[in-house]
Image 1 (cartoon, helix red, strand yellow):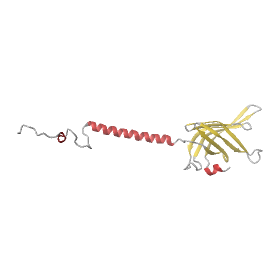
Image 2 (tube, rainbow, N blue to C red):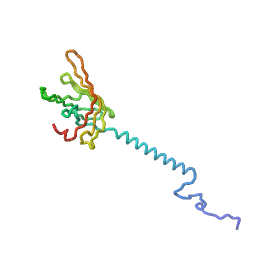
Image 3 (cartoon, rainbow, N blue to C red):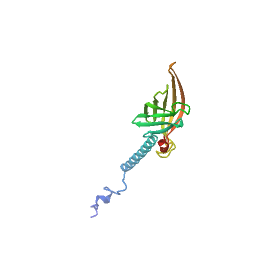
Image 4 (spheres, helix red, strand yellow):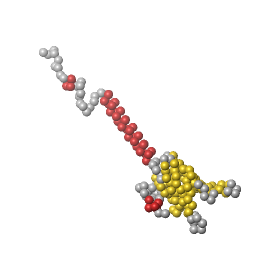
Length: 183
């Protein structure tokens, strides 16, 4: 009887499954390392995507202060096209109290914003800049969005055909919902 080996099932000899929670050998270590690496790459991509999309403003439609609080820049965004107007108060001594400059050309690409107005009395405006989140907390708050960039005020002389351009660095802050509803 001593020469015949004792027959044990495969499970007891360790050839089938030792412990379902622990894989033996290099294959199990490789799978664990690959899963950990995959998780790390996925987490990094998620953080990167959140940071890159966190800075973009989906829609910049609204009313903004234009140079002073009496003046209004109103923009409607349709895809990448911008439409709207600028209402400029002329002061108490002017014959017309408010000039409305319609936006003739306007576009948005990413956070880049550009527009140009029509001419009124040989004067028009050009803007080039970016749209950014402001200090307002919610979409109806004042300064929720800001247009930051360079504004050019172009005045043409119809007699001499010369143009005078005044450039200035500006920040147009979005008006609150309550301010935008007032005339």
